[in-house]
Length: 193
Image (cartoon, rainbow, N blue to C red; front, side, top):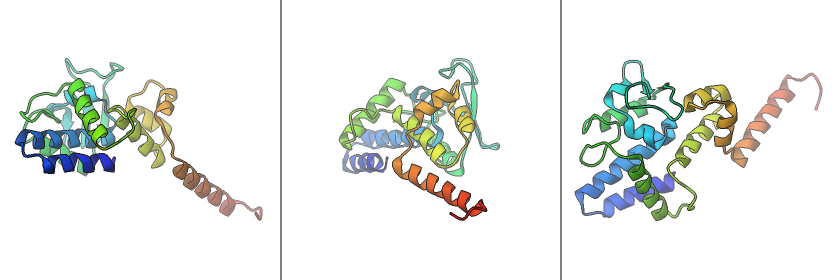
């Protein structure tokens, strides 16, 4: 993800066109929101000011006419202070949480194509696509110790089995987590290991 951010920044800095600079801004914001909130491209493109409850620090995904999630069921996602700041910054230009350089609604296809352009520019593997960010969000939550059922609800999945397909547990995280758990077990045990 860091390589992708750096590539987008470099492209923005090297660009002499104002529209390209704005494109890199909304692309980077869409990536942050996808990783931070686990949203699909279509969900990000549909989000409007009215979907954000700033006072309660919540985002309502798919709870109005013309905006349905893939499952057809709305979900509510808690927002961090950083995510609220990102969304508030974006809403200065448009009523869409992420919008085009001109403030118009983005299409999921266009967002995905822009992401693919930057991922190729960054030299990322060809199989990486915008939806991969959703997998990253899921994995980050699991590796941070969030219970699987909470991650399922957050992601809007119909079952834990679907959520499990999204998790890509890194070998380092596995080693750290199991080692810490074994140490806790040894410390709590009356058996001398």
